[in-house]
Length: 125
Image 1 (cartoon, helix red, strand yellow):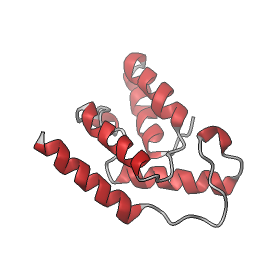
Image 2 (cartoon, helix red, strand yellow):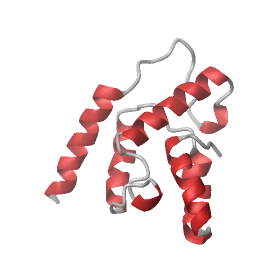
Image 3 (cartoon, helix red, strand yellow):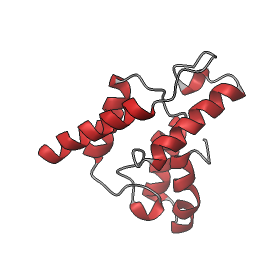
Image 4 (cartoon, one colour):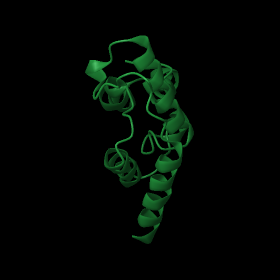
Protein backbone atom coordinates (compact mmCIF):
# COMPACT_ATOMS: atom_id res chain seq x y z
CA UNK A 1 0.00 0.00 0.00
CA UNK A 2 1.50 3.28 -1.14
CA UNK A 3 0.22 5.23 1.87
CA UNK A 4 2.07 2.97 4.30
CA UNK A 5 5.28 3.11 2.27
CA UNK A 6 5.08 6.91 2.23
CA UNK A 7 4.54 6.83 5.97
CA UNK A 8 7.59 4.58 6.42
CA UNK A 9 9.70 7.15 4.57
CA UNK A 10 8.31 9.96 6.74
CA UNK A 11 9.10 8.06 9.94
CA UNK A 12 12.57 7.07 8.78
CA UNK A 13 13.39 10.68 7.95
CA UNK A 14 12.01 11.97 11.25
CA UNK A 15 14.03 9.46 13.24
CA UNK A 16 17.23 10.36 11.36
CA UNK A 17 16.65 14.06 11.99
CA UNK A 18 15.46 13.79 15.59
CA UNK A 19 17.39 10.96 17.19
CA UNK A 20 19.16 12.50 20.16
CA UNK A 21 22.95 12.52 20.10
CA UNK A 22 24.59 9.81 22.17
CA UNK A 23 24.97 11.04 25.74
CA UNK A 24 28.25 11.03 27.63
CA UNK A 25 27.03 8.09 29.71
CA UNK A 26 26.12 4.50 28.93
CA UNK A 27 22.60 4.00 27.68
CA UNK A 28 20.86 0.83 28.82
CA UNK A 29 19.56 -1.61 26.25
CA UNK A 30 16.29 -2.37 28.05
CA UNK A 31 14.02 -0.76 30.60
CA UNK A 32 15.23 -3.27 33.20
CA UNK A 33 18.77 -1.89 32.94
CA UNK A 34 17.95 1.76 33.67
CA UNK A 35 20.10 2.37 36.69
CA UNK A 36 20.29 6.11 37.32
CA UNK A 37 18.39 9.36 36.93
CA UNK A 38 20.44 10.55 33.94
CA UNK A 39 19.60 7.44 31.95
CA UNK A 40 15.96 7.61 32.96
CA UNK A 41 15.57 11.31 32.15
CA UNK A 42 17.28 10.93 28.77
CA UNK A 43 14.98 8.06 27.80
CA UNK A 44 11.86 9.70 29.23
CA UNK A 45 12.61 12.86 27.24
CA UNK A 46 13.07 10.76 24.11
CA UNK A 47 9.73 9.02 24.68
CA UNK A 48 8.03 12.41 25.06
CA UNK A 49 9.61 13.61 21.81
CA UNK A 50 8.44 10.51 19.92
CA UNK A 51 4.95 10.92 21.38
CA UNK A 52 4.79 14.65 20.61
CA UNK A 53 5.68 13.83 16.98
CA UNK A 54 2.67 11.51 16.86
CA UNK A 55 4.64 8.28 16.60
CA UNK A 56 3.69 6.60 19.87
CA UNK A 57 0.30 5.11 20.68
CA UNK A 58 -0.72 5.47 17.07
CA UNK A 59 -3.31 2.67 17.33
CA UNK A 60 -4.69 3.80 20.69
CA UNK A 61 -7.94 5.79 20.69
CA UNK A 62 -7.52 9.47 19.86
CA UNK A 63 -9.89 10.52 22.63
CA UNK A 64 -7.34 9.34 25.22
CA UNK A 65 -4.24 10.75 23.55
CA UNK A 66 -3.51 8.07 20.97
CA UNK A 67 -3.41 8.41 17.23
CA UNK A 68 -6.57 6.49 16.34
CA UNK A 69 -4.88 4.84 13.35
CA UNK A 70 -4.60 1.21 12.31
CA UNK A 71 -1.93 -0.86 14.11
CA UNK A 72 0.09 -1.06 10.87
CA UNK A 73 1.25 2.52 11.43
CA UNK A 74 2.63 1.79 14.89
CA UNK A 75 4.25 -1.37 13.55
CA UNK A 76 6.11 0.71 10.98
CA UNK A 77 7.33 3.13 13.65
CA UNK A 78 8.48 0.27 15.88
CA UNK A 79 10.30 -1.42 13.00
CA UNK A 80 12.04 1.80 11.96
CA UNK A 81 13.11 2.52 15.53
CA UNK A 82 14.77 -0.88 15.74
CA UNK A 83 16.25 -0.61 12.24
CA UNK A 84 17.80 2.77 12.98
CA UNK A 85 18.89 1.70 16.47
CA UNK A 86 17.46 4.78 18.14
CA UNK A 87 17.03 4.73 21.93
CA UNK A 88 14.09 2.74 23.21
CA UNK A 89 11.13 4.30 24.96
CA UNK A 90 11.29 3.41 28.65
CA UNK A 91 7.63 2.98 29.60
CA UNK A 92 7.53 -0.64 28.46
CA UNK A 93 5.23 -1.80 31.23
CA UNK A 94 2.77 1.00 30.61
CA UNK A 95 2.85 0.71 26.83
CA UNK A 96 2.70 -3.07 26.59
CA UNK A 97 0.71 -4.13 29.65
CA UNK A 98 -0.93 -1.45 31.79
CA UNK A 99 -2.16 0.76 28.95
CA UNK A 100 -3.74 -2.03 26.88
CA UNK A 101 -5.34 -3.45 30.03
CA UNK A 102 -6.80 -0.08 30.99
CA UNK A 103 -8.09 0.40 27.45
CA UNK A 104 -9.67 -3.06 27.50
CA UNK A 105 -11.32 -3.09 30.94
CA UNK A 106 -10.73 0.26 32.61
CA UNK A 107 -13.46 2.71 33.36
CA UNK A 108 -13.87 5.83 31.29
CA UNK A 109 -12.31 7.77 34.18
CA UNK A 110 -9.32 5.39 34.23
CA UNK A 111 -8.76 5.83 30.51
CA UNK A 112 -8.92 9.62 30.75
CA UNK A 113 -6.67 9.64 33.82
CA UNK A 114 -3.91 7.24 32.72
CA UNK A 115 -3.60 6.68 28.98
CA UNK A 116 -2.09 10.00 27.87
CA UNK A 117 0.41 9.90 30.75
CA UNK A 118 1.50 6.40 29.80
CA UNK A 119 2.05 7.48 26.21
CA UNK A 120 3.83 10.77 26.86
CA UNK A 121 5.92 9.40 29.79
CA UNK A 122 4.34 11.59 32.45
CA UNK A 123 3.35 8.36 34.18
CA UNK A 124 6.03 5.68 33.97
CA UNK A 125 4.84 2.26 35.12
